Image 1: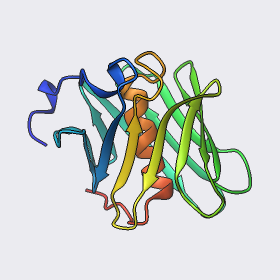
Image 2 (image 1 turned 135 degrees about the vertical axis):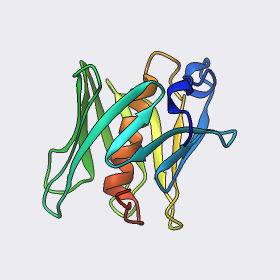
Image 3 (image 1 turned 90 degrees about the vertical axis):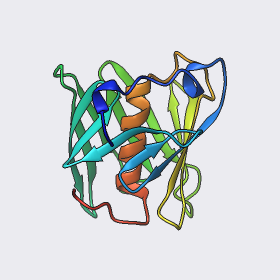
Image 4 (image 1 turned 30 degrees about the vertical axis):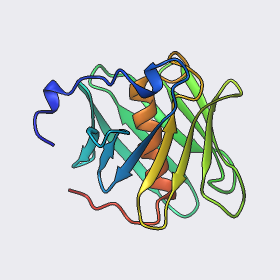
Length: 165
């Protein structure tokens, strides 16, 4: 993705009033509803607008953990709190989220903040991962949080292994 520095924060989707939008992770790039690249991952760095998040993850069979450090030092974490990865907990700065699978037989997740659904994640067998955002309004899920949480879900749930570029 060329010119990451000039990448602006999207105005549609999760920033509209209850305007639902589907983003898609394909490989290491995140596309918005219009097909524009809004984020990408290169060499374990997640590029989101003007932010760069250094990603560390442990995709072990017994425990999943993903941690990111923002350029300003703020820490974001997604971690497994039970025996399986069905229920994950995320802490993004001072905000907390729950990332729960909707069924034991599917990898689709609901992401909620204080019991309010703020997004939904749906891995596809093709390797693409759909991320439905904007279901709860503009203040419920900040853009950087949304992108980080979606990438963590890709790491734990995607059928296709992500190459380290």
